[in-house]
Length: 381
Image 1 (tube, helix red, strand yellow):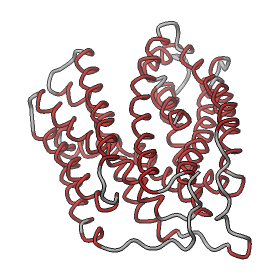
Image 2 (image 1 turned 180 degrees about the vertical axis):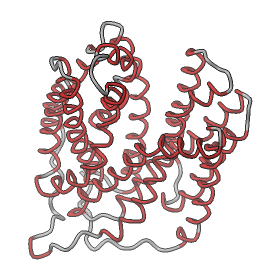
Image 3 (image 1 turned 30 degrees about the vertical axis):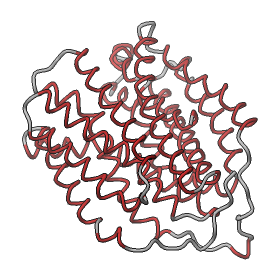
Image 4 (image 1 turned 90 degrees about the vertical axis):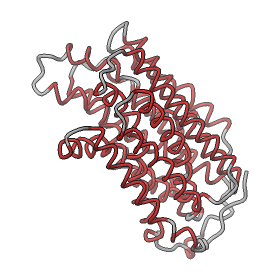
C-alpha cells in the first residue's frame, strides 16, 4: 500500500511550490511551459512506459523490480535538490515517471499474485483508499515544506530509502507454481484486455474531474476563499474513501457493478453541471466521488480477473498506462469542451451525460459469462 502511494506523492507534492519555482527560473526561456511540466510529466511518462514496465515485471520478477525501482525513485526524485538547470529538473522528472511506472505496476501485480476473490477485492479497494488519503496528506506536506523553499518538498522522496529495505525483507515472493514453462508460453491476450483498458481511459477522466476542476467550478460561482475550496476538496476526497469502503461491502461481481457505479458518477456530474448554487455543487461532487471510489477498484478487479499469472505483469502495465493516460487527458478534454460549450459547468454536464450513456451501453455486457482464463492463477499467499 505504501508503494502504491509513491506515484501519488509525485503527482501532488510539488503543486504548492510551482509559483515559487516559476519565480526562481523566471529568466529561463519557456519557463511558463517547463515549470508545469515538472508536475505533470511523470504522469505522462508513466502512461507511456507502464506497458514496458509490465513486460519487465513478467520477465525479471515482481519483488526484485519493485525494490530496485523504489531506490531509483529516491535517486531521481531528490535530483532537483542539487540540480541548477530547469531542463535538468524536467529530465529528472521523466526518470521519476519511469520509476513510478515500475512501482505501480509491481504493487498492483503483487496484489493479484498474493490474493484471490473477495480478499483481492478488499486490497484493491484499500489501494484506492490509501491513494486518496495520501493525496490530501502530501498536498498539505508539500505546502508546509514549500514555506521553507521550493526545493524543500523534494526531500520527501527519501522515503523510498526507508521503503525499499522493508519491501525486500517483508514482502513474500509470489508463488511461481502457475508460471508457465517455455513450451507453454503463448501470445499475450491483448484482445481480452483491449475493452477494459479503453473503458479505463474514460474511467480515469471521470475519476480525476472533481480533484482537477472543483476549484475552477467554485471560482466560476464566485467562491474565492482558499479555506472554503480546501474544505470542499477534502470532503470530496473523504467521499472517495467512503466509496472504496462500500466497494468491499458489495457482494456482487465487479463486472456487474460497473453500470450502477458509472450511473452514480453520472448523477454527481449532472448535479454539478446543472446548478449555480454552491451547496448543490458540493453535494454533486460528493455523490460523484462516492461513485469514483467504487469505480477505480471495480475497473482494476475486472482487469485482473482476465489475467493468468504469466500475463499479469504485462496486463497490469497496460491497465496502469490506460489509467494515467486518462488522467493526463482529463483536463485537456474538459478544456476543449469548455471552449466549445462556453462554460466549465456545461462541459461537466456533458461528461455526466456521456458517463450515463456508457453505463447504459455496459448493461448488456454484464449478462455475459466471463471468459475462463487459459491458466489458473497461483494460490493465495
